[in-house]
Image (tube, rainbow, N blue to C red):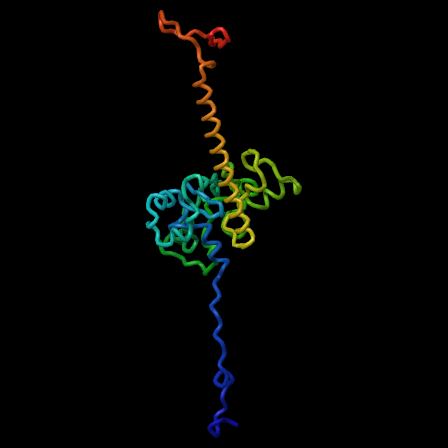
Length: 266
């Protein structure tokens, strides 16, 4: 039944099948983003900052980028929207209390442990575990005490920088309220100032970019208003009617305003 008088070809030999694209483990990538700086790719270390898109950075790495944009090869592609310190927020994170007594190496890694019971000084290799289970999260939600390891959605409030789980906010905030208190510090926070951390949803990212633009416009408007008010105060201080008269005998300022009457003008 074969083509050469005896061999039976298989289907993959007769029909060219399209190679399957290698699927990237998106879950593992998201989890890794909770443990490393988006810019330097180094482990996250305090002080940690977040941007308007909810990405996490080491503050030192951002400062290096602002001083030299070529410091990191893909810096402009990652954080071109960061023009200054006003575009980032220092985060207030709750340390994981379980790490206080954890003496495992590699920043909380549970990949290997010494077999202290037998006192032999040799390492006992644990079974292969997912990345999130190999790493002990540095931080937890101060309300629910859930670990910030990428398995659960976390958020931070832009005005105060407090970090908490999305579940804690939803449980403590009224569903129809647009303005409420921060679940950690109690500061008044608008719902539009809640930034999801490391979200991969295109719609959420588009909304965050829109909020960033609105925040920038608001700051420019406030700066322009302050400048205008300062200019008005300066002009009013130059008005002779608002200045006091000076006593020529001792040079002291008499607390009386000059009255510009018609007789004086004449």
